[in-house]
Length: 117
Image (tube, rainbow, N blue to C red; front, side, top):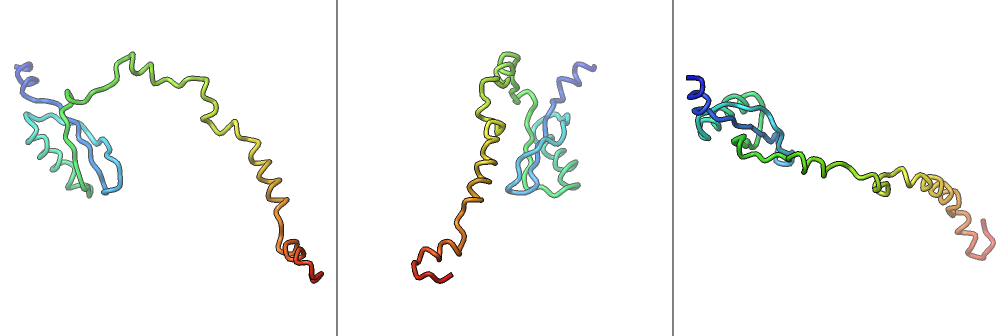
């Protein structure tokens, strides 16, 4: 009996979007016999609580996740220090020197050659 119930219901993942510019966010999972019922359940359980502009209901079996080999490939390599800002610490000092050597208005006007200051 329990096996028949498991085969009847399928797992769905629900994603929502609050505004047109915001990204989709996972909200919850639900059990439903088909996609139409899953969409109705998602709307009833979620849309009446919070304002949303769109909802995605996806069958969990259709969601692809990374396997172990693919997940291992995501590990950060240690030879990419140029991507972090730690290597550019000297720029703060260079910028400070640049600002101190900037020309001010009096100096620029003194270049006019008429001797007025």
